[in-house]
Image 1 (cartoon, helix red, strand yellow):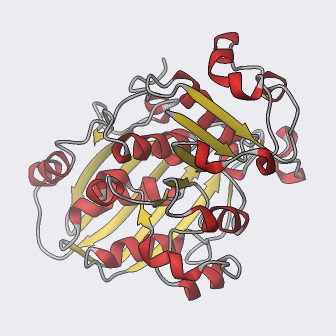
Image 2 (cartoon, one colour):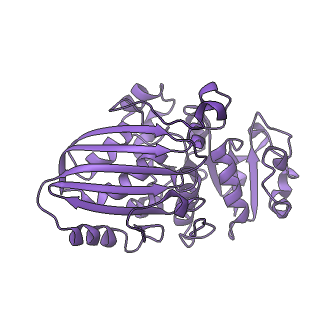
Length: 342
């Protein structure tokens, strides 16, 4: 298979390239970037080893300008591009090659909601046909999708523990998230400098002001959860990793044993998602993997959920490759790491 990666110089794109270059079913990778066109791939990401060269033969190991690529020559297209730019480029390609988008451009069914939180959409008619790529909950749709919209990292970490309890929760759901600095992207910005972030924790976009909130609402509403949702993310001084703690009101009593059984049953056939082997999950266990580890606690009429992912891997690039695997009938785990770090 040949994979075209558009916009591959940010953290998400770099992680995506690393995964694809090791994937057993990918023979050729085309890294496309306007800003890095002509530059050696290893000059942008020295962490990529020399053995990757054989899969970069079509570009001589260099980034290529997207304008010089024939998209139809690829079997699959990944877009790790800014919002709106992704839609502008991918829109005309829909129906020719399956596209897997890591931006927000195709996550919403309603163009008005997208435009309220992002910008005007160049191809609003395509939204209804896009598949929301939370793989564990939409495998059948992903398997035939022409546009697969990968969820944001926060929605992934929030929704995976919550969705199994649809129908059992209501009232107010409160999620607090801690994320590594890489979630803010690879850019020069004062408040992301080491001296600004080191030894410091900070919340941002609290309550219902973060642009991932309507994405989470959409997914919860789709399974019949009608609840107020409050979400507050926090930046913490680590590079990668995400921890989410969610508290929800239970409509009816639930035992601890039954709560754990609900999670096990929901992800019985999901290789990457399940209960943590720890009492409470740890981001180190899932770093550089496609896993989401979950813990659950029942306290009175409250359900406490704890989940961890690697924000660059399961929260972005790994999930994109997982969707590719499902879309092309490959083993779902192909090319994706299962084991965390010491």
